[in-house]
Length: 336
Image (cartoon, rainbow, N blue to C red; front, side, top):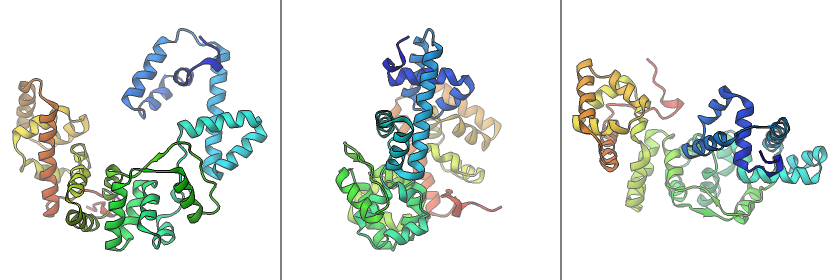
């Protein structure tokens, strides 16, 4: 195998997984995308022998990067750089920080993600809607949902719209906003544009606000930008989110949907969804459903997605009428 300094990033990752053992590596693999798993599996399959020297060098590099990440999380990137320079020298520190910023994506507004939502709300609620939207786009959806719910209704709509229509923000603008909002934060310098916001971002936020806030925002958006409102609604609750429903709600939904739509929709459903649906049907109904799925043979993905969307539409209608409840975080937890 090549010398440690000649290995590619994928090869180092493969060596690391082999060094950690099958049990730990399997746990790591579960958190990777399918394409990443395929690429790493190929690299692992191509490894014939790993010398102790290569193994030790890769593990040491991984350890140093983990340390650097901890320094960044606790004191910012400048503090991490200073500590690493003292410990490892300027050249090695620069190399490690470079790898972190490229692969681990140290994101702007780190100080905001460490702040309680209530404190952050007081901090940004009087800012321009675009500034609030920019900060919220970099927050965890749970944090952003709490803040959006607490804003005045008109401001909620304006901020949600700006998050949804946001595309790319230049590093200069990000640094300027960071410095204004938190002077103590050492800005993270990125050479490329940072992607944040967009419809998926506002969907993640709206999925975590209460139903009243969601309806207020979507109704106002529908008047101002119907196409954007429809796109957000379409993505708000996806078919796989059925696992968030309780048994009573699933039974209520099953009474409303067409058997053919259910058979088609279940063709690509996850095991968790299938188990939940089967658990809420009679033994005979489950047998009939499985028979229908088996007789169906190959189907077009578009037809499956259309069937799933029909079921999602039924779910949304039942929620609007108050017949079922979709859990939306801690405030919506049901007490029996």
